Image 1 (cartoon, rainbow, N blue to C red):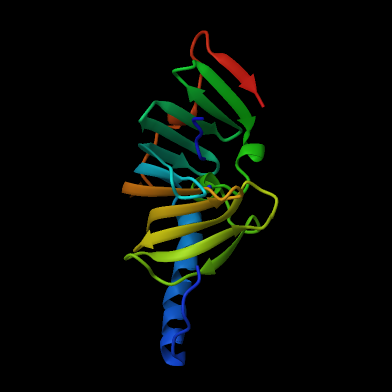
Image 2: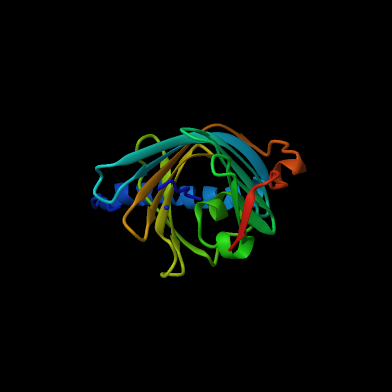
Amino acid sequence: MRRRVLLAAWAALPAAAGVRAQAADAGAAERLRAFVRDVRSGQADFTQTVVSPDGARRRVSSGRFEFQRPGRFRFDYARPFAQTIVSDGQRVWLHDPELNQVTVRRLDEALGATPAALLAGGTLEPEFRLAAEASEGGLDWVRATPAASDGPFRSMRVGFRGREVARIEIADAFGQLSLLEFGRFAANATVPGERFVFVPPPGADVIEQ
């Protein structure tokens, strides 16, 4: 079934090195807070890889992401099939062109503690608990754990390259792993407001949830 996904332990170090590592890693959590506070809009290419709980199956999709705080965002999936997810700040619209079907949800019900909340929401706390992690793969990592334990996501790891969000790893409640990798990230880019307005196409089956 086609679904979107709008889904660390490390060894002890000697005391002096550990203090330096913790101080460096703590900066990743502050960068995430600064990203939410200071980056009011943006655009990026994305590649999304969804891995099944047993690791045997992978689904890869890609497209373009845009956002404008608070609560406005747009995911345009281009491959392997077209799909659009748009939040106008009040409702979230998901359009499947092949089925000519649109599903609609209230933003406060759809956003919650989700990756979109990290990227386009207005605040982090109290929805997430943040914990810095060790640098890995050339990125500085912070783990964001939803405060509510009964949501669809167990945790999200955000990897920074400098002050730019480069990767998000999402573990959902069913053991599925989703990886979002960003390229050509343009922070505080001018994004026209009409990009976050969605009008169902003629004849579309609109389902309110």
